[in-house]
Image 1 (cartoon, rainbow, N blue to C red):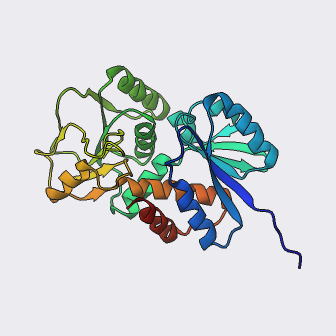
Image 2 (tube, helix red, strand yellow):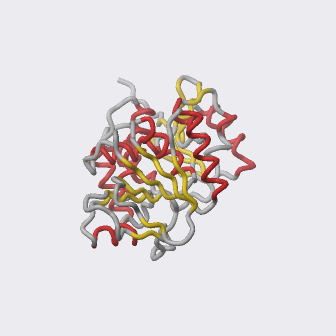
Image 3 (cartoon, one colour):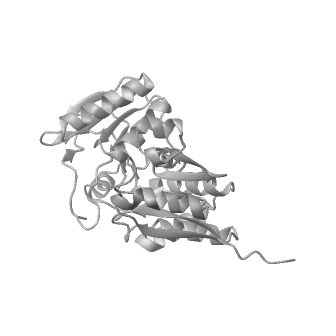
Length: 284
């Protein structure tokens, strides 16, 4: 039997992109499944994004991830958006389905899977506070609303940006969302079930920075989550852990969004354990 020497290609487009660890995780997954696939970490400037996608189509790449600053700018270059990507207004994963480029957003789905599988929490009927109104916050908020949270409260420094996010999600889901401008220390209310830091506060290299929040009134089983994955143990999570509160680190969301991307690209079940191990080894 003739050997097939053609490797299938995936990757990530971003700028900057050198510190993005997704390739470590996806290459480990391909190897664990015996797939002759590659994941390329590619620096692409905004001015070259359209050319990069022409190249993607020309060489038949199976798909790519998008990171800063391309998650919104990529939308006009695609053939179709998933419901969630359209609701969020951003794309982090592109699937090439027989020449048709489909935009998906797996960030919120990854967070939701981590919430259910790693923290053991069903978000339906829960009260959730999200800190931030950027891309990660939008993705997480959208998926939580679709999953049936009872209350969703957004806290953000920029009132204009926060209200714009709330209005966009209300229009897309018909669900009620509340907003609070983040001025001074935010005291987490005693009836909140899940707190999510969806800002970049605490991200490398600013590893000692912490969101200006107080957990003094938090109930004993408040789950404190952080979208920051580098380092996994952020000052916010360390504070919560010291108080005996359950925590969920950003590696969970990063792994599961990658798991979903792998499955969308390959059509195979992802080797979650191998992906988690590769990512933790890379970052710890």
